[in-house]
Image (cartoon, rainbow, N blue to C red; front, side, top):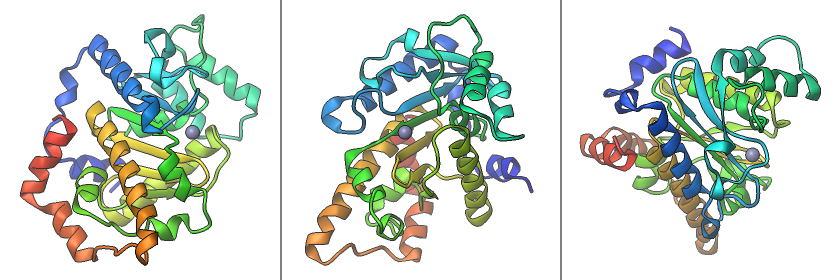
Length: 273
Ligand SMILES: [Zn+2]
């Protein structure tokens, strides 16, 4: 079974998103970006992070390079052609100038004022997965305080409380430090494929060494929930060090929370479905 087939099979429930108009998608993406960009939350500063949303199978919106999440407006979100961006995942390595030219060629309006983010390629891949409509990539201070350490994987290998599992899934996927852009997008694709083969579902969150967090959602609300819950998880993990280190839940406990019918209902409410 292919990765897409496994994921299509594992998606539970319908996709409430399919009825949204292009204008609604844009407004939801703007609101989500503003919420992720609230300065006091410490998820991004300056021009950090990027967001995207699927319009249909052929197009999506992605943050323009250099714009700020907290203040972004419609002009700062570029509409791009998904198949053209996805084509960059295969074939030979691309130089920086080739990547720039290919990204411009993927713009629905090639005369547009802003170029799409350099991370547009991983957005295109993740949005191509069944049931994925919104992506939020941030550099939270709390999460990066772990991802920028030698023990980043070991520190995040177990789950520590039920709401973490409800919002963020049974486990994150991991990407070792990789040069941002097309190279990183290829690593993200391989990581997701490996995760699906190992676990039979897609990850909700990807942790990237020395870089940051990617939240993968059906809805904009789900992306926000995953990001805020990873922020909390990272803070609790940091606090646990003062008291002898985290007590990871057992695999059986994690499985139970991940599969309880009442937790499934709560999950849908949190995700805004
Ligand atoms: Zn980044």
